[in-house]
Length: 346
Image (cartoon, rainbow, N blue to C red; front, side):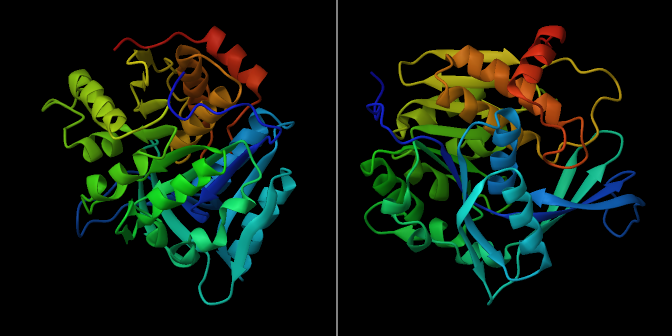
C-alpha cells in the first residue's frame, strides 16, 4: 500500500483550487527580439489558470464527474465571464469568492502561429489574496483536491515556521481530513522552485509538473546542450521529488513524453503522440489538459502507463484549439484518438 492511501469514502468528486485567470490570447507571427516588432493576427479572450482549465477539461472528459472550483475573482466583467463559463459546464462554484478590492487575474498569452509555443505576461490580481482561510478543511467535501500553481499563489507560497510553506500546512490539513491531494507548479523566472515546491511535496499524494518545474525544484537541467531531453536528469528529478515525501506518484510531462515514478520505485515513460503537420493550433492549455487527464486516470484507478497514455491523448486534443479548453474531448473520443495515432520515439 502506498503512503497516504486512503480507505474509500462516500465523498466523491474532484475539487480544483488555486489560480483563476482570464487569458487574452494573441496569435503572433514570431516572438520578437528586444526592441523589435511582431504582428498580432488575432486576439481572443478565454478562461485560463489551473482552476478553469483543469475543471472544465474534466467536465468535458466526463460530464457525470462531480467537479468543484475554489479561488478568487474580481467583481468585474472578467470574473463574471469566468464564473459563467464554470457554471455552464456544471462546475460547482460555491467556493469561488468574488472580491471588490482587486480585479480578476489575467494573462496576455503570446502564441506563435507556426509552432503554438507561448509566452505569458501575467497580472496576479485577485489570486494573490486567495489563502487557506478561504478554503478550510471542513469545506473539502470531495475525494480529491488538486491545487495549483505553486509559485503563483502568494498567500500559499509564504514561509511557515513549522511546515516550510503555508501550502504545505494547507495540504497537511487536507490529508488529515481524508482528502487525496495533488499539486502543480508554474514555470517562473525567480528560480525559487526548491524553496517553494519541496516543502509541499511531503503532503502531496501526487505531484504533477512539467520538466522545467520538476528539474528546477530538483536542481538539475532538463535538457542537454543540444536541446534534447536529458532522460537521466528527468528520472533524477522524479527521484528527488519522491524523496521529499510524495505519497503516490511524481508525474513529469514535456512535449516529448510523460513520466511517472511511483512510491514503489517503478518508473514509467510514455512518448507523446505523433501529430500531423498543421494539427497544433495552440499550446496554452496543454499542460493543464495533461494534468486533467492524469487526475481523471488517478480518480478512476488507472495504472501508471494508462494514466500517461490517457493524459497524453488529452493534451494532444487540447493542442488542436487556440484557447485552453476548446479542444478537449470526451474520454471515449480521447481513447479513440489514441488508438488511431502513433507515438513518437524517445
